[in-house]
Length: 306
Length: 149
Image 1 (cartoon, each protein chain N blue to C red):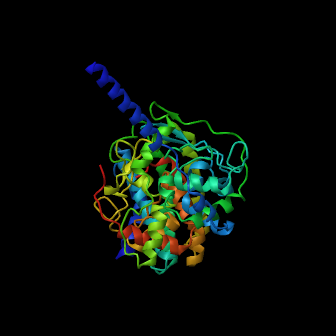
Image 2: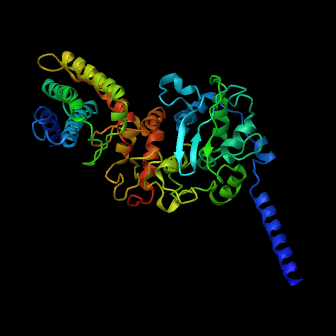
Image 3: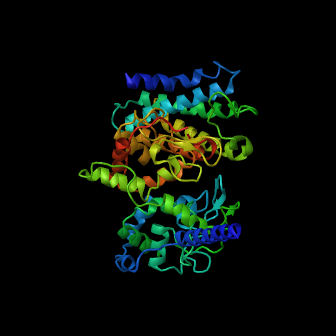
């Protein structure tokens, strides 16, 4: 009898844990009040947000240049320890892209990583950074999106191993890793640092590549921007703090000039996946590049992460 | 001092290949440093940090042309690893694509040489116009054929 009661008790505990996990992992979008408060977007301002966010670097064709960067048909593969993520079609096509979405759908995707169907997106879509964006920028970006072409054709799905192929599990991952709090404390009386932090930690999503990850795929904020293995295989994503192996010898104007021209202080050129990022940064106002530079000089210096 | 060092680096280009023909990785890295020296000289002029003279312009342009002619010879099979090389394996996986990038570089430097004439571009504006197509090829090749670092 005792054994039976223990067994029933354990079974009950299991059910409670499962129920708790089910609720904890539930996708949570913005509140009705937050949705109602989304401002009217401005497409011209949204274009700057589009380049700051680097949307085209993953969602346009891999070799796209010029106006082809506005065709967001997807298809680029991001290799990872969990499997291959394939960037989806996020063009204005109503069938194959996101042309049928509402502004609220778009805001939920960008800020909460939740789809219109109420499912979690995988964090290969860097809403983990975009969640720090202000709602005005989201509205402007969506207004700009309306001007983009529709591209036909769905990209293939992600190729992930069990258990990473269970979307609901991302809900638990989000509880651990999704936060809109700033990463680095800065002097908030300096508007340049505030702007730089916003661009780097929010839309620019620099930390997604330049910061190493733990075994669960969460960013190691203790080594913020200190470099990381290249998920594509050989080579490394560089340390962009002032620590050993980083860019401590670069001045603010060196960093701003690099983002504008693609040339380092010793006149090496930008390469690899950073080329697309640099070309996006070159489209921003010079004040934005200077702000990014000021912020990078202000983040804690770390020796290059292992 | 900085100017002198940059000019010296640019002028080195022609002398390099004899140094270490047995070590293609070292040769191509030195060649690329010469390219960087010429790019630095150009940037210095563009930013107004270095006073322009036609001799400076000619030095930078001929340095890039020398590198462009020699560079592709230093990527033999088996030189994809070692010596801190940042060459991407794609150079050997896609030799036609790499050759196309080298051709673009050579066409750009040849154009700059012909714009340069006998004594170098007359003024900083002419120098800038001659060098910009050369500098534009850096990224287009490094995007695919050099490893992220």
